[in-house]
Image 1: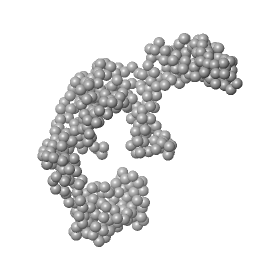
Image 2: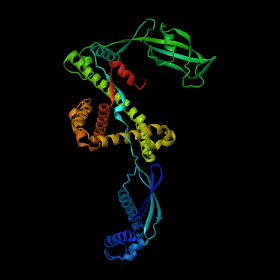
Image 3: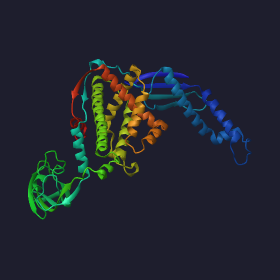
Image 4: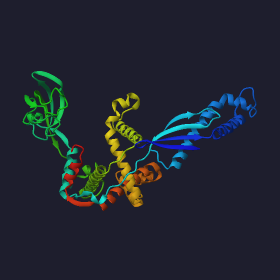
Length: 438
């Protein structure tokens, strides 16, 4: 086999590969003879079909199949010989495919870049320290009570926290605008679900009252027509209701799966969930810092093929999140590559850097941490042991956990090398700063 390697540009490589005709033709001949022994053709007994007839009928198809296999095998042997690591599938261009002549083709592909690791000891990172206090637990229980609240109609003026049922019609310069009208809509006052001034204008109104309020739309409002515009809303209140919080009793605790132990056990489980949430938020913030530092301190080319693959992954994830069905619309038109390009490049870059750190530090997934992560995942289900067994029997799921654990180990390794300062914080501060709205 003849092999010639060229660097065409950046990470792109071009292999010109020649395979002796004998390797191809001997395999074609072998398969045709096997076919002659087994094929059934009208007019011939099984095993008695002339080789010439088999070649006439099946020769082209068999040869195409063999050529495909020879190209695949010879490409693999060539990259091994030249010590290059392809990133993605090669683009194959035939040069010579004629029967009886040496097989020649050109394979164009990208290779993985060489990543020169930066000095990890120069990184300056912050480790957040926070804990769940009794006051935090009290606040969380109040939130849970509000989620289970019932609404009772009242004969009084609407106050902050009340729910009102209203009709409204919005106008700008005396003309109604799109999306500014509703009938029988429920609105919790103080929820800030409407534009500034709208909910405040309803405070003090009673059932049966009507009122016109003046508001100004925010400058960043989604409608170009209404950005920064002055408008009026004619509002009619049909009903005012107040929330009634449930008592902390057995029935309330049972709604959260606490059958025994009363309030003490309930608080214990609430605390455990909050600590898990806090731990995950702190871990995510620290990991985010580390990944940002890796990106900022490394500059490397990324293979286009890997970025393209990552774009497809991100697009598929978004499609799944919104329950879209590929066959119902043109996915690439609705979700073009440009939407995911930046994030895909970042992910691929981080993958290359993290992979180099794993290799350099000789890291392997820690079995105890893998076990602990699976148990932590399982603890959120009703039958934890069944979930653990399911993970242990599913290689794909296990690989995902091992990958996540290895990534955590990389973060820990970098923290052990970097300059780290501790920052005290509270549960609320950590959780709020981790919220998507922040």
